[in-house]
Every structure is written in C-alpha cells, then in structure tokens.
Image (cartoon, rainbow, N blue to C red; front, side):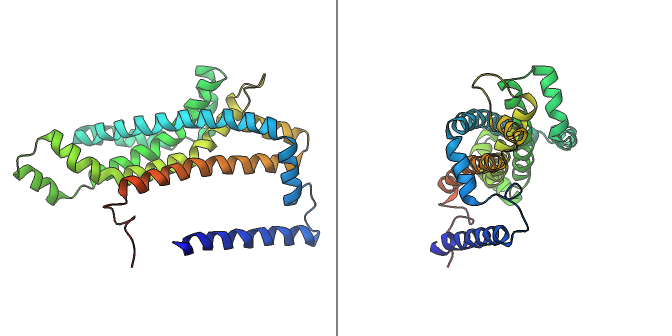
Length: 258
C-alpha cells in the first residue's frame, strides 16, 4: 500500500525536476513555459474568478456525468435483455461514438442554444458511450455455466438479473464509469468553449482559457489547466472510492495481493 503511494509521488517529483531544469536551461522562455511560482501566483491572483468558473464547470460536469452513467447503464441493460436488440442497436452506438465531440458541440448549440443545457448535453455525449460499451460487454461476458446453474435451479429472469448478471457486469460497468469520470471535465470545458454563457458570472474554465489566452496571460492559462486537473482528479477519486466499496469483498481486482 505504501509503495502505491510513494511511486507516483516520486514520479511527480521527477516531472517537476525536469520542468525546473527546462526553465533553468533558458531554452524555454516564461511566456511558453512559466515557472511553478508564476503559475501559483497567477492562480492566487485570479482565485475568485477561477473558483467561480471551476464551480460552474464542475456543476455542468457532474450533471452530464450523472446522466451518462444512469442512462448508459439503462441502455446497456436494454441491449442485454434481448439479443436482437443488441444486434440491431450496437452498431449504431459504435457509429455515434465515432463522431468527434468538436462536431457534436456546434450541433448542440444549434439545437439547444448557448448555456447550461448545451454544456451538460455535450458532457453527457462524451461520457455516455464508454459506459454503454463497457457495461454491455460485462453483460455479454457472464459465465455460461452460472447462467445454466441459475436456470437449472429454477431462478426467475428477475432473480438471474439481480443476483447474477448485474453483479457480474459491475466491474465492467465501473470501468466505463471511470472513463466517463475522466472525460466529464473535458466535456464540460469543451462545452463551455462552444456553448458557454459569456456574460455575467456563469462562465466556466473554457471561457477563462480563451480570456487569458487573448490577454496573453500564460501563467493564468496554466493555472486553469491545473484547476481542470484537480477537478478531474476529484471525479476519478470518487469513482475509485465507489469501486472499492462495491468490489473490495469479492472481486479479484480489489482483493489483497500476497
């Protein structure tokens, strides 16, 4: 357990040392690669605006993430309930997954106008397909011997679903949820770039990046990147905690290793 904590910290220190070495070499000026102190100073100076923008982006990311997880699990369950439904709809799920978000975003703005609904929709779309794909794979990978055992013992379809299929698909579902958690802030920031409200206090991180870039305030742009990373870390950590609580007693990925 201690090693799992120490190794990432050591790697982070190596990255920081490389960053400082690149700055000390003089080959990268501060307007391209500002120092850590410059970024922290810019973040502190812009802390109020950054906090409001982070709250706006986090709220949109949380809404889109929640909808993508809930609807993604439901659609995967529907696809797994009837084989012909899976065969009919799975290619279309893959097809829509291939459409880049930079193309979907302007379409969302056209349909829903600028503001929170468009941003949440963009966030939903970027996280929905990983949840569906992974969960559907989990349902399709249920052990055939266990299915036969449930059938022989007279289990009803509802009992088979609740006590076999859903638990068996849970690890794959949580993998999809982790992916959705990783891309949720990305979707919200992308949505803010295309559909964000540029007036009042309802601005997100995406708008601040545009603003600071136009002002050539590069340390503040890096501060926005750092804030976005912290937001993503919060989402992913929450999913990892949920996975540990749900799987720690029985799934091999969370059992103690000798």
